[in-house]
Image 1 (spheres, helix red, strand yellow):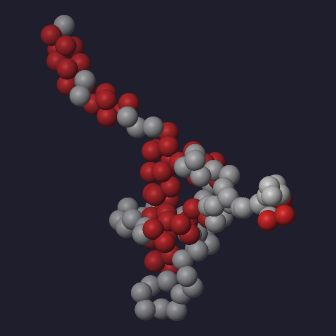
Image 2 (cartoon, rainbow, N blue to C red; image 1 turned 120 degrees about the vertical axis):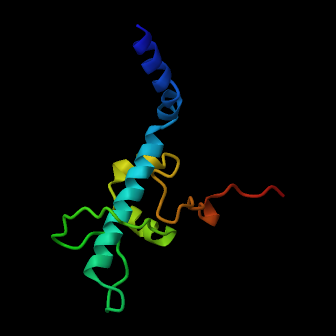
Amino acid sequence: MRAVAFAFAALLPMLPASAADTPAERAQAELREGCAQSYASYVAYYPEGSQAPAFSGERSKGDNRYYNDAKPCNEAQYAAYLQKADLGTVAMAYPTAAGNPKGGKAKKPAAGASAPARP
């Protein structure tokens, strides 16, 4: 009985940390990991100093390796990766941005669509 109490007491500090992990945070972590893996594939396929196209956010064709030492993406690389990533995962990671046009800003109505001004 005493061993069970000690085991429970040892596990108790870990509970709040896992409860704070929301689905959005998990989806963001998954997207960041996918970006790092994709960029590591890009770096492996196009070594430094070679002629390479801009990073498009995808792995090279046929590259199914998992890079344990993949470096995190910077913001420009992450933005390029988000354009190619699974839309469901992006919507879960960033629920307020889901459905926005690519510019991220809502379009303004045309000038003729507003109500006429009062004299």
